[in-house]
View 1 (tube, helix red, strand yellow):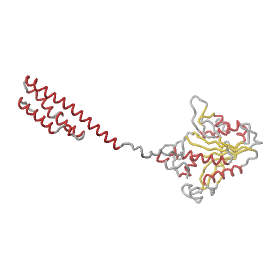
View 2 (tube, one colour):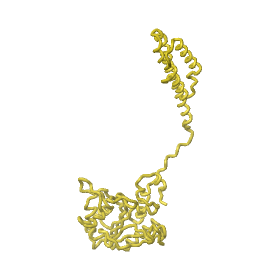
View 3 (cartoon, one colour):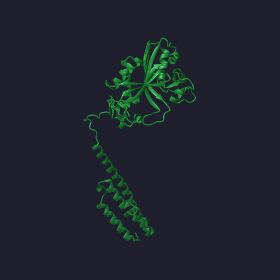
View 4 (cartoon, helix red, strand yellow):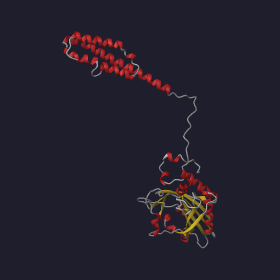
Length: 354
């Protein structure tokens, strides 16, 4: 505003008061309209702000007389704007609360339905079958001694087979993370006398490069049967029934010679392809067979290590990966999907395997 006289200043003030009467704050229907009015009057270029700035052009007497009027109007407007703002905010909150009000007569939301993890379901089914076949549950610690994990299983220090089971060693401790659940077999044989029939499910650890089919942490189920006159035929019959219960009565097994330091003779066990019924497909590499587990007769040195007389007692042992079974049955192509806790993946599976 340019330099003004008292008469002009009083005229501008009268026009502002008339404007406020024509546009009362109470007429502002929402916060946006209220803020628009505040800016028009009290903003940096607002009409009342301009009048206060123009006081500098008036005489000292005029400033003393007119200044308090303008300041009083400003204080009154500030208070009125805050009061109206509070009213509008309260009305907005009330409207929102009315829209979102809880109707206590409505039925409650159903809680989210939990699901058994597919690995847990697989392990429970595997151990359930073995339980019906007479195997009892046995457990052991995850951190094991070198003696139980290697030496008593016919893998002495510097034996080349230890390279097959490279694992994680605990700092400042003689213990290591077990590479298989076979130490449970050692513990069971050391505390029990034969005959003995146990299954050893649990988590194991290996220093593996993680990819679609390998993990540094995974799960196994092992079986052990010790008695008099146990033969390879007993092992084959047991695994035939086990595989047929898991994959269906049409499932066939095939034993191929292999090497494990704790069994002799040893075998890799294949099952007929679940997807092509043995006729050949890309999944089984057109062989009709899928490699599944390792097995064999317990090595005499293992029996000696737990003070069992190999001339009297014999037995068989086998071990199978839980993830391997779950991947085949559920059509999962990447083992890492089981551990990522992605609900989009886990919600595909019910607590019962399909």
